[in-house]
Length: 424
Ligand code: EPU
Image (cartoon, rainbow, N blue to C red; front, side, top):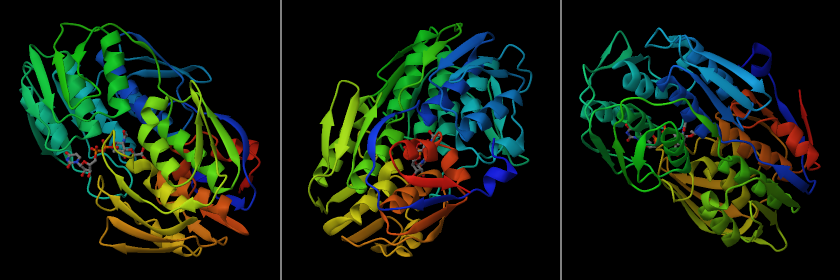
């Protein structure tokens, strides 16, 4: 959990050192949050392996505990979750306010108990983040939904599968509906479902628990309801966003970094676009090696739902493109306000103009100089750390707790690669 002390922490980076070495990627933050919520579907011990030690996981653990579940670390990256004693169907308001993923408890609780409530979930300031898709998914299963006393509710005497067309392929909306539908009567078909690897991995876990799900990873998912699920034992998939961040770190500093333990299939768009920018990427069986051996070149980039380029790597890639020759053009098409970090980057000398809130035009290469920046969300914060690694002089990134929400020991991992970085 974020302590008062961690809130005040800053990362100080002395840039200009090429990063070299090998790094192991951790389990995916967003896959973990879905898996933790799914443990609410059964009244028995569930074991999650390869769980990252990050603040969002600790926060989600508090959310589950506020419902009556026990959540314990069995080993350094193994979580044991038992939801037998869950006796509430609404998590504590102050816990869900800082974590978007907390809303996933709704689908699991609705599936298991036929009723669920949740105060509005928090999350990064990156644009509008409606939850209409989630609520419509619940309604299509026969639940009544509403908002009373600033709390969302969903209730059903009996959940019944049906056809659900999602207006937008929302990741959490798809996961929420999928979890509730596992225990509904009959068959649910989600049309225009999200296809992200984190949706696929949740489906895999639910299948292991006895759910009948097909089509996860495509835009049509079918869930045939079952009477009961059994407890899960699952391994969290590698974090594709952490992998992309470290690959960029190697290349932006003119070094060479091997990222181990990745799933290359999840990184198709990332590898393709980084190569297009001039980064040399060598693929191993479950690793990649990124190096910059020539000048970087400008490119166009669109952040889109999977298999499009991930919005969560849009800011880190923008930093990379400040070092590329020519005019790069970025179009953020997932969130409508995810370019707020750019005004901070300009302090370092980046030449970026925006048109509206979703298009950035970057002229490069521009030398970056150290500055003081404030992390405003997890990915923007990571992007600032990358900028600091590439900049001349000292960069301070404050409010680093945002980065700690999604990256395990980022300072130590970068130090292992030769970065001059300290936490103050
Ligand atoms: N949207 C709607 N209606 C809805 C829900 C979403 O129009 O009812 C729109 C949103 O306005 C937004 C777009 O859909 O423009 C994407 O939202 P989505 O619901 O897919 O995002 P999310 O499920 O809330 C997850 C990740 C995010 C990641 C996005 C997109 C978790 C906990 N969060 O959010 O991760 O950026 O999918 O891939 O899984 C992060 O890790 O830094 C992060 C923000």
